[in-house]
Image (cartoon, rainbow, N blue to C red; front, side):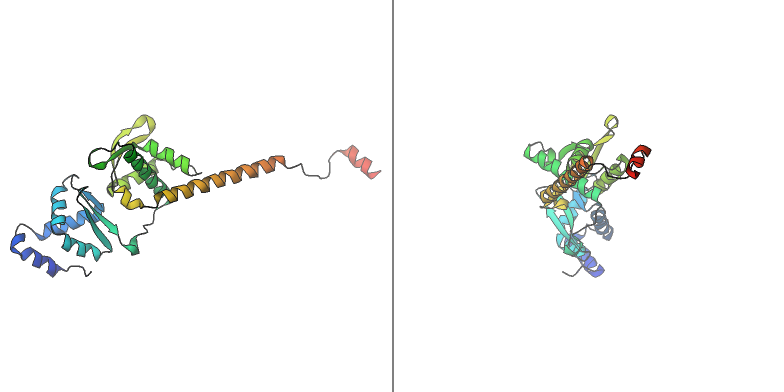
Length: 235
């Protein structure tokens, strides 16, 4: 698909049915989607932008295709998503970011199975529950809270989650997980979790075996410092 040009936009605006549109409205809608990557109609000041993109989906689909992204509209969830195309599909995340993202996906699926979804399919959880999954899955020290908070803020900006009130006594925060978490984690998320758990158990077992072997090893046979034994050996 060839991306639309400025001429295409001007032609679109000149149509009688689009007299209510301006170039600034179209640019503002595109900027908002590029910034958030995922937009719900119930987001703050998002209703008009959602309706505008749905109304002119052909134009916006061509625009974002030229930027290497697919425009995905889900009317049942009132959500618009920009999904990286194959060349951009493997977004580089750190190990901590990836594990936390998958932990949120696990919490979301648990909420769906327990039928505890809220309005618009959201699922409530906390950062403490997320970090408990982190500890269960991988044999490594969890990241410090300031880093976890920065990662959660980046997820919030991408509209995968919303952050609620802080929980000072637990050094945590309330989290609302959005259905868009499924799009960014993919269908193979459980396989990745299982691989991490298996690798962590293997590492822990290896460390236990090495420690046991070290304790069971006989003391090294070497020269003694006892002068009496030295004299006996000499005689």
